[in-house]
Image 1 (cartoon, helix red, strand yellow):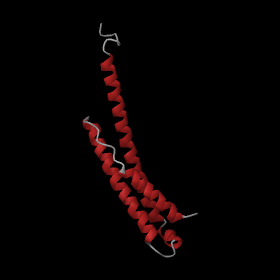
Image 2: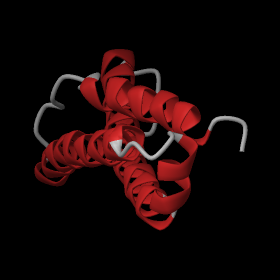
Image 3: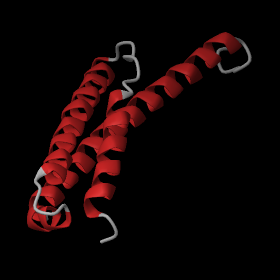
Image 4: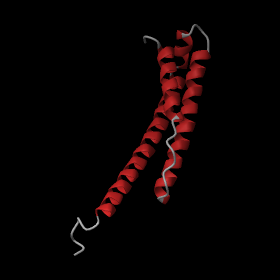
Length: 120
């Protein structure tokens, strides 16, 4: 009888693995796009607080420029990785490898933001 779930345990395991892979793919897609949104927020903050950041760095545009450039870089690499995963999920092909560059980029952006804003 086909209703018996114990008839083909290998197929059940394969279905569970497929569902878990799909969940992992959608989760990584959302995570990469969330990193891209955070990068946009950092760009907005760098632009909005540019005079304050210039004042904090003693009139130098180095720190605000670094924050803006790392935010833009984070957006670009995160959006690219998210788009790659989104295409893979929509076409139901094998998931691409995990891209670690967006995580490194957001970490650098956060460190620079911490330095730029100091103890504000």
